[in-house]
Image (cartoon, rainbow, N blue to C red; front, side):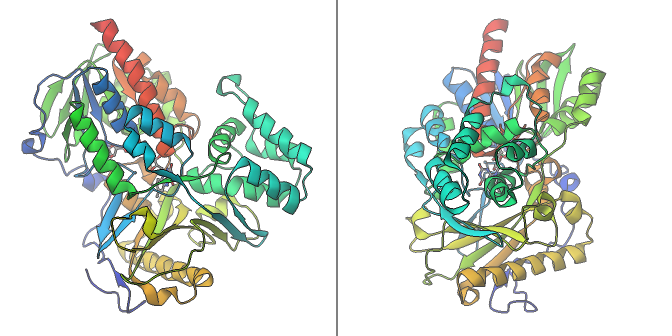
Length: 502
Ligand SMILES: Cc1cc2nc3c(=O)[nH]c(=O)nc-3n(C[C@H](O)[C@H](O)[C@H](O)COP(=O)(O)OP(=O)(O)OC[C@H]3O[C@@H](n4cnc5c(N)ncnc54)[C@H](O)[C@@H]3O)c2cc1C
């Protein structure tokens, strides 16, 4: 690891890569047959492609239902976007910032009580922007208090808004947008819109002009009973999931890049991975819907109308992140678990993804997150970002932009923790290119596709018998909870399919 003397001399940074890393390069990294040594059979009841939370949950459920399961992951580590990395004595979580309480139930029901017991509510979520500075527990009660007492909205109006959200139903085919919903209940109150929308945009990239139903579902899940996090860290959770899957009989291979899903006469017949073919009647793909159809199965195997519909599906934005490691032995005061900061005058979805960053969310990992590591702190700043903005940079520009992002982030952080620069001993930045490279996620999307992707995902088995998709789509089936729950839903469908064909 080298130091970047030009910027912050005392803060170590990652060495720039010698060559450009992108999806095309990653896809040349086909593993060897020895990477498949854990695959003990030539035929499996079901083969799961990808070990994101959707893929792993599907694999685990299918194995618990008594099926033989092969789980194939192209990376050398499981987890997909639910990932972490270790550098200079620090462990950095990539996507463990917060999720709804439902994760506790999902882990208990489909994984284990031990995992569920590690879910804890974050104590304080802070907003700091030109329109307001508030601390909240992110519960319905607290939002109601803030809207009534601080934003001076009539209590009845707030209750009516919550009631409206509670009654929203995915199957109602309501085409109204989130902007219309806000305008109805809080006309022209851009400060209220910001409070209600900014965390959701941060969380999944959605905007005011998307279907109100996707907002309603995410809001009702996310902003009603608080924000939760996994104590132990992503590494602990993924390691435990791997043990559970193995106990349930899942054969797991990493460095196993699936190149092809084989089909014949509209039916799944097998897959090709690292040059070897396995037969199966059922595949659950946890790769995105675009790569599954375009690259793994092949567009020519689907009806033209279906492929046309796929081409209209947009992916969500990606993210940039700055990872800051606090020197061993240093303490920092509590300043919130999740801190939504912005210098932008109002909520603005475009500004949130702009390379000229004005809004950052700090996730602060205090020692209780990893109690087994004595007194370590890390901070991760997350920003939404457009893939093309970063992908179009030359390697030199890319490096400059990453360093600037790190320096600007530390400057902003100084406002909340004066003197923090002296306590940071390691800094690293991730970009949409990083996300795409390591997970093959389409254009580095952090939350899969927009709303319309759900239809394509759920219709795949109608196009190709035995082909299922589980993974971030439609916003509501994304995030840690959405992806895991979708994994359960899809495994139930695949289980029925296998019973029928047998
Ligand atoms: C920076 C960031 C921050 C986030 N923060 C949060 C948060 O705070 N809370 C939250 O709930 N969610 C968060 N998310 C989103 C959340 O992590 C994802 O929605 C979820 O983890 C996605 O799970 P998935 O099942 O869709 O699969 P993915 O995580 O997308 O995994 C897919 C897997 O498939 C593998 N794969 C792809 N193609 C192949 C192939 N051909 N052969 C073999 N393997 C293949 C990939 O390597 C990958 O492991 C964040 C995401 C990012 C990027």
